[in-house]
Image (tube, rainbow, N blue to C red; front, side):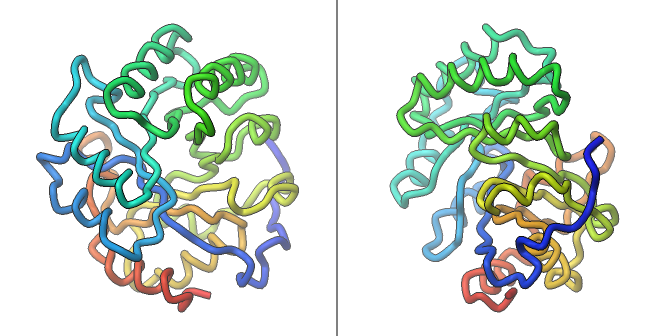
Length: 249
């Protein structure tokens, strides 16, 4: 495990410009308001993950195609969701799914969910990412570790998700020392169960730890009974306003 400490990179908080990464809302038929809200002018979106059926599905979905097209039309990057199962998925399966995402939805890159973190798995992840980059010009690759991985992964993905979990853990979390060698644009934090009353504190933690892409929600993980990322947080308007105006600084 890497040594954990606070980095001084974002200590003042003013040099970390925060935007949203959307981990993957429910299907557009189930969450139409959420998908429509993503095209609202002024929302600081870095990217949105399209997860049709824990992957691209077996055939093109017209509702997902429409949702992805609307996002691209307003300049929002759309990423295909690939579940690596912590390295258990065969290389061929992942690449086959990636091709379907590209052929059907013209995605701009990929989010590798449940990405391995250990050093031994790095060569296979690197092989997968290199293949994905060869498929798309300027592909954006997010490695969804959910915790701090072996530092070598930072040389493979464009962004690393280094925290995924509840607010009760996030508010006491620390950042791996090696992340100070990279700019905030390389790191993402996803936090669920985060009450509105702690929004300012959560934004300060993200800036302090040097993560410029976030998704905070008051929805909770019910142990397999509901995904906290499938819908908007109750305070979406508030957090969009604070990030957009710089009040959170």
